[in-house]
Length: 246
Image 1 (tube, rainbow, N blue to C red):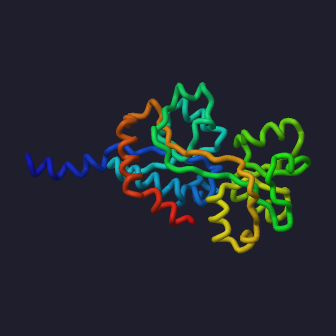
Image 2 (cartoon, rainbow, N blue to C red):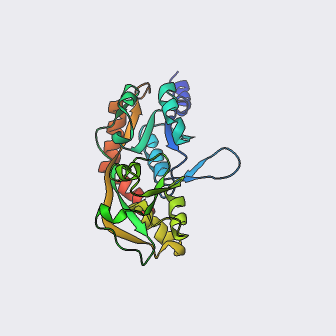
């Protein structure tokens, strides 16, 4: 009997449900390397991938990444098709969404968004300097500092699917400035020589803490997820992952 249990033990562990992590297809490197082929989108790497793998391993589960367009996230919340989504912020969700989700208490990290431009453009120190300018932003994202200016018609939007595409558009001069995270800009400069000349303005567009959220219908308790995350952060695993993409 003991021998049978010993043989079945690893099989039972392997059969444990996966940790289902939701990833939006609008995410780009360094956060997510998403295949762009004609078939089904797949997550190949990036910060979200590596952190998801680490979190799943800590929980004794396999990581299962579910890729969805941003416009379908609300549907996934209602259907309960995943367990966790990481590198998110509560401000990006409505009060109605709180029926479906809850947040792990400790933030993972903070990201700073800046205005990036080609050399020769005036550095932006004040919002007033954006009057009449075209600013590149990601479709579907909220920009609390800039949205009132867009809505008032004081400046124009140039839309892109993700920050990586925004940088390419910026290099072609399709916007005066683009809103890019500091981490994204550092990654782009390190991996694409054409983008190394881009300049960041002193004005910060946002400074945002990123968290993991849990779907309330998930069978994995919030306390278990929070303990696993805390252990990984205390060990420096996230910082180790971030160093790979800087």
